[in-house]
Length: 343
Image 1: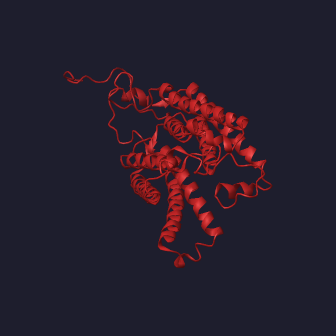
Image 2: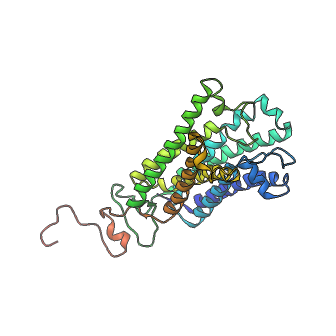
Image 3: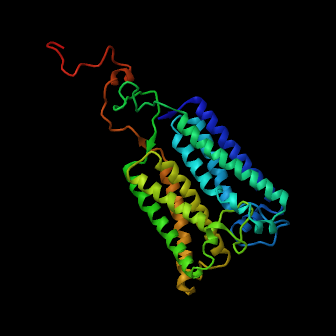
């Protein structure tokens, strides 16, 4: 299915609104630091003292800003970017949903003034609404594309002048399945390890947030965010295994978050000189640093692999009735199933 022109414009406008809203919060945080690198250090957990006010954003907000900008540009250029709109809508809902109860909690009032917290809550409601708008636009703005016939829906119809949705090639699909599954396994394993450290007390706070969890105003509880990345990584992995059209945009979104997670950890390791002295670290710390390097590498490889245009979603399909019309080389009705003598 492809998107109508109106749906493409609507999707691009929704993405632009989300990007502008997130960008405004990032700009707000930039005004509280003397150097933009100071905000990066805050995002990566390396420095919390060189800011004039507590930060409201996280590194994930920068990732979302880039996702919205990329998807909005892609939708304007391509009529077959419905899956990209769905991916952007899903990640928006998943990341912003905890804000509904986190920002309404009494303990959050100790970290931000009522006015700022109210603005953040309005932003969260708006982001969730826009995310739902992306899903609705992708579903309601579709029309029969070059792979579907209105008269014969069971058969593909080809048109040389129309673009079709693309899916990963066979080699990329296998690579994406392996890397996404491995990354999901690594993140899940560390979350299980974290749960054992809590010994059952206070661990749910990693999913719901609390005064004991250091969380910026627009931050997502760490356990919730990890669960979101793991689930989406597995969905994208199995989609890639079966060469599903949605696996490319969803895999790219997951790859962007893996880059953020791994990049934040590697930056922290470099600043604390953990990589040069890796051999002398305790086993747990060695595994942690290696996990960060792995996540960063996986994210980079996935971006390079999935960003390449794949094969047509209808490639290899058997032409059905209406094939002559789509090619522009036939005339008259399709041949009957039992042609008369001399047909």
